[in-house]
Image 1 (cartoon, helix red, strand yellow):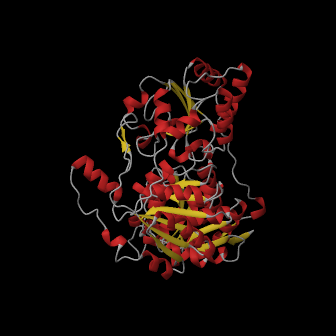
Image 2: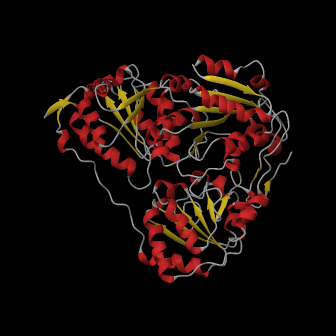
Image 3: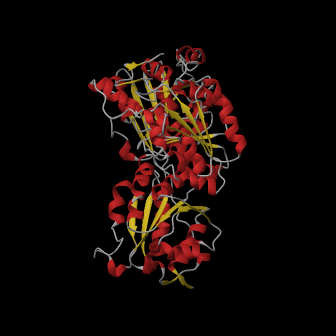
Length: 556
């Protein structure tokens, strides 16, 4: 049957399971909006195009379901790039769609005509600029498959306006989403992996974000229990094992790492890495990280295996299928490790936990995270973007469930927090909390208006230390100077409470540690989006180092 290409696009979205679009209308994309307006899909209008992608990414991170980010041409499209990069490096699939000038104007410097498909290509799995209207169904079917298949990630489809408005032959009833197979591990690799684990004295499991994306987190914990292996999670896998599970050894790393995770890792002689990437903030100095231990690396993307260092055994396969096969092989052999740390892990966690019960005024930032852990139940979803507050959050927050801690991991993107929390709340219906610093708060603060308009009660907790804290620390310890990082106005003349109220939200500033929980309670009771500005000590440093055996700890 004949219909406008734009109508076919919206029909395809419905067939592919899209229920939410995060976008901003514009002249270059209004052909699609005409049909989106009368569809079953809910549209959320944002205040900045980058925020549309962060919201769509947050939606997926919280639910595992795809969403669409939609905007017009020119600067609207180029504003997508940072959001796409944030999704790409964290393996988050999003369908990004941009409007474009008519085909006759392509390459002629027409108003708001930019080659976004070429610009975005390095930060997407694939991009298309559709110049033949009849290609629309094929391109979108391929786009959805590409976003989901293998290592997931964002894709972008650029649509000239006359392509949107062209008539094409398309039968929605005949459309079927493309299918794909996830690779299974080779039986000989599975057998070798279990043999290596059984031969090790102190094996550990390292769960990465890829295990969560594959839905393998429960099987990973079951395998760890079967083999008596401590579990270390990367930052992107936070919540894949309950914080109080007896085998939870916390995080390993030079920034978001924890003393217990670094100790257990350094004591190990074999690492089973599942869905991880061995990136720099996790490993630190590679020679220290690798010394004295063997590595088994499971990743669905073959190019990830050996990218940082060559493991003793690489398995390019789906994490869930691999862990399932490892479980079956281990059960058949019936051997458990005698790991020296496993039995005493809960006591070791308590012994090595960083101090958080500070009663000082100004408030020590560690105390903020202690109060967040006490106040919110396990169902709350947290987002965080970049800087010293993100690192404190990763080090100190207790998260008990997968898809409840949604950081900007590889990009470390200021401005990610609020729109991602909005998307996560839309997807899950849960209380979403954005945890950020005072400087980061002003990146995409306008998205508070979106939360207010759609009555989504995102709570923003500002850990206000009136500094570019991470940069101050780097300048201080790496270079011995300080330049343009102090922001005392953020605790004085700049009033974040009035900012919140101006966007239709609840706002409150807290000066004493005992006031944090009552403020959070009032924020929840308000039923509105809220900003809790916690005034903190500007001079508190964050524990970190250059190698996992040389993390400098700070206690105040």
